[in-house]
Length: 176
Image (cartoon, rainbow, N blue to C red; front, side, top):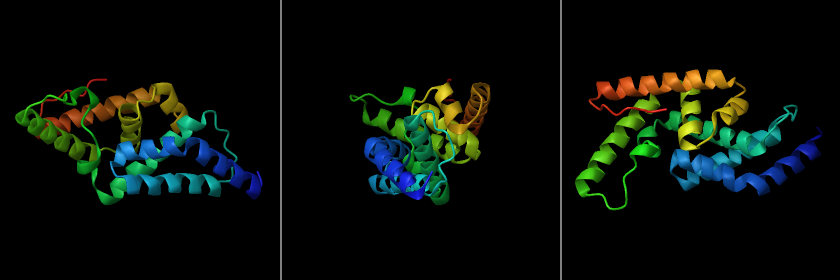
């Protein structure tokens, strides 16, 4: 692919999927400015790539790329504790008490600390599955893994998180 074709492709994808990339990064980072930086980085990397990879699903590919780049930002900054929302199943309702909100915040803090210790591949799969809501098959295609491998990685991540949380006195079960 020529440089001009690569440029046109990146520009077209940025127009079409820019919001998707921003949202994927924002869900991980929780900061609009950082999400914009990741958005630019994803499309810049795409522009600089040689264009040889055959992409089956641009939304899945770009969402995964944004999540990976956002996780890398967090790893560099070690700010998981402020960036990740608590496990979806444990999110509080609108009418919670102050005590419930404090308990929720404390559990979220412990989960974020535990997530920061995951190996990179486990953090990527975990983020794509539980933050982005991607299906196992989409994650497998995006990361070029088998679906079985993704399931194994997610299982390991959940077990590591549960063990880490148990060490911290939290018996929260990380359900599949």
